[in-house]
Each structure stands twice: as C-alpha cells, then as structure tokens.
Image (cartoon, rainbow, N blue to C red; front, side, top):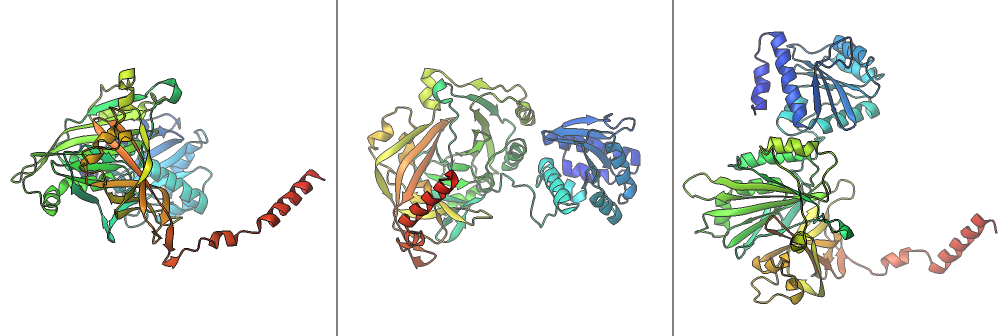
Length: 505
C-alpha cells in the first residue's frame, strides 16, 4: 500500500488540473474503502450530471465531490452539489473534499442553506484521516451534528477535542504512589498470564455452542511500527474498548499495563524496562499479549520480540485470534480486515466438541474465604460527566511462588487459575468502585474469572473493600445516608395515600 501522507503531498505538486482531480478521486476512494465504505466511482445517482463518488456505510450514503483546486472553493461549488442532491433520494448527504479549503462565503452558504445537507471537508480533516487521528465515520457524525444543532460547518482541529475516541488512547490508567505509569513490573516465573479488565463470554449458554474463532497469521509484522499500523486498522474496522490489558513476559520478569498505546511504548523501550528491574541476562526473546473486547466477543493479539543488545529488536510469530459467539451476519468488516492484514483466505471455524469445552469456555471461582490483599497502587477510570473513579487495584500476589494452590483453583485440570502463582503482582478489578480520595479499611480478593485465549491464561481477579474510613478527607459517618432519608413510617403513609388517590378510593 502506498504512503498516504506522501501521496497527499504529491497531489499538490501536479500541474495538470484534470490529473490532480483524478488522483485525488483515487486517493479518496482508497481512504473510504479503508474505513469500510462501499465506493462507486462516476456514479449516476445524480443523473444526468456525473458524480465523482457515491459512498455508503450503514446509515450513511454520501454524494462526494473531490476538488483539488489551487484556490479555495467558492459558493458556486456549494450551489452545484446542492442542485445535484435535489436529484437524489432525500437521505443522501452531500460532501465536498477540498485540498485548498473554502471561502468564507462558501462556508456561510453551506451553513445557511440546509434544505439538503452539505458537509465540508478541508485539508485539516484529510490530514487527520491520513495520519490516523480520525476516521470518516466519526467525522461525518460530528459534522452532521454541528450542522443540525448549531448551523456550523465544523472542521477538525488538531489541538482541540478530537471527534474520535481512538482505541489506542483508552480511559484507564495505573497509579503507583501518586505517579501515573504506563505499566507495572514484577518478578515472575516464565508466566503466560494476562490480567484482563473484562472477560466476555462467547459460549452459547445452554445450547452447547462455544462460538466461532478467526485466527490470523501476521507474518509481515517485524517492528512495533508495523504493529501500530495493524492496531490502527483494527480500531477502524471494529469496536474495541481501548482499555484492554496487556502483558510482556521475560524469563524472570513481567510487565502489565492497559491499552495498546502503552504496549507499543513498552516494546519500543525494552532496554529501559530491563535496566529498571536489573535484568542483565535476559532470554533471547520476550513474549507479549494484548486482550480486549471486540464487539460482543474478544480479541487476543500475541507475538514475540527478539532481543539483541547490539542490534535493533525484531518482532515475529505475531498473530490475532478473534472469538465471537457466532458467525457475523455482516462479514464485510472481517473480510476487509483479513485482506488488510494479508490473510485473504482466512475463515471462521466453529469452536466445539466436549474435549475442548473446558479449555475454551469461561471459568469462575468464588473464594470460600476472601484473601486479604496488600495494595500497592490503583487503577482509575476517567469519565467526563461523573469524574474519575478507582476501578481496580494493583496488589502483591499472596499466591506467588506457592507450592500448593487452594483446591478450588486446581479442581479443573484446564483451569487458567493454575498459573496464578507465576507472577508477583495481581492487577485486580474492583467489584465496587470508589471515588478518588476515598480511604477504605482494606481490600480482599473475592473471586476469579478467566479463560484460555490462544495459549494465554486470561485472568480477571476481582476484589472489594470492607468499610469507608474517609471520603474527601472527612471521616465517613455511617448514619449520614440514613439520616438524610425521610421517616420510613411517614414515607409508607404517603405512598398509601397516593395509591388510594390513583385508585379513586
């Protein structure tokens, strides 16, 4: 695939206006196809006038004009596409792409005449799409929202609020002693554990099915930059949380973190990671895995990084496995993704059979006696409306190096919990979240959830707390909530009176 950023710059240097226009149409076609749109060139949707492109995906159908002029587009171009729109069905939206931008009068006309919607895409929008900071689906939604609600032609601004919540950003972070970290390190014993934030169950309940799997071999992945490109395509094609968990394992050390961006950063600075934990004689390779929700299933990305102190590191043995509860009705995004990662012949296959049931199904164990935890850090989730909250904790693993695990963890031969003694730390989810600054009397491990994903033990330790000691620096009064409630007897009388009135008695 050609370099999109280089191609965008190349367009501006072409002297022939006709050739510039054709090249720009071709570039837009590839960009739309890359975002999962069906593209029709030279469409007759606005007959008798020819249209550059007609593109569609889901609820959106767009009549697209590609303009690669040297000057800004004026009101004549807005009038032209509006007249074409009047010869199309009412749900078709107009879109003009201009590498030179738009005059102020053209923008005002697009904002004022909304008998048919015309969305304006300037050079800043195209740059954001080419560089992976935005995608068409979210830009279209944002532009339509601003046009409908505020009569404003909205353009992407790199220093403002991005319209795309990129999966590589996530909203969760690890905090140790007041410092925000990308990952935490600990001693381990040749571990294959990933501590997940969420474990979707892809089994079919009482019907006995275990869903379908799509394995993809990523043979061309050799550098973290290659891996970043794959993750970018993954985020465009599917809905992933971006708060997925990852683990990097060496022979005697492990690193745990949240989000693909932190994983990529960790792979790039392997020397710094090793020096920080005093790992002078590492194994010749380290293993990494990223686990996240994908739609109503899950995805696991695994690989190895070859280590050589005197040469650049190299990735190999990378693969992705996608698990869903069943075969998707619309397989188009999966087909396109398989092509983009050079697996055009990939197939979904059913996961089933009694022998495989225990290995692939989800596991859960409730501990008969909660285990007290020594908490070293917290995991916080950022939320615009409700504010930050503590949604998890990082704690010392009370089972690390244990010669005998509790029987409930080893009762099933295929249980992933058999590897729970292999890491010094646990990254736990909280059953009950806490406001930032709240102090509790302690934390306890109460249950474990898990499954096997491509030979990775995916484990979700779940903890809770006992009693709140202080909230926002003030001692917690257990009678505060009760005293704020109305008298229970009066409340009952009031409820009975309202009920009698409604019934007419």
